Image (cartoon, helix red, strand yellow):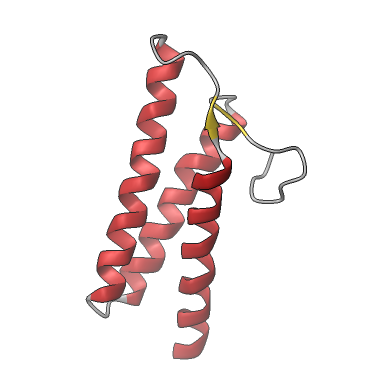
Length: 94
C-alpha cells in the first residue's frame, strides 16, 4: 500500500507542477477576473510548496492532499475561463 501512496503522491506533484507551467492567466490583471485568476494561481502555488514541505517531513498523506487541492484550484480556474491552456493538453477537465 505504501508504494501506491508514494506513486500517487509523485504523480500528483508532477501533475500540479505541469499544470502551473501550462496555465496562463487570461483576463487583464487589473480586472476583477484577473485578480481572481491571480488568487487561484497563488493558491495552487502555495499548495505545491505545502505539499513539498509535507513530503520532506515524511507526511505523504498531507502532501498528496495539498497537491490535489492545488490542482483543483487550477482546474476550476481553467473551467471558469480564468486561464488559457494549450488545446492539446490533457491536464485539465475542460
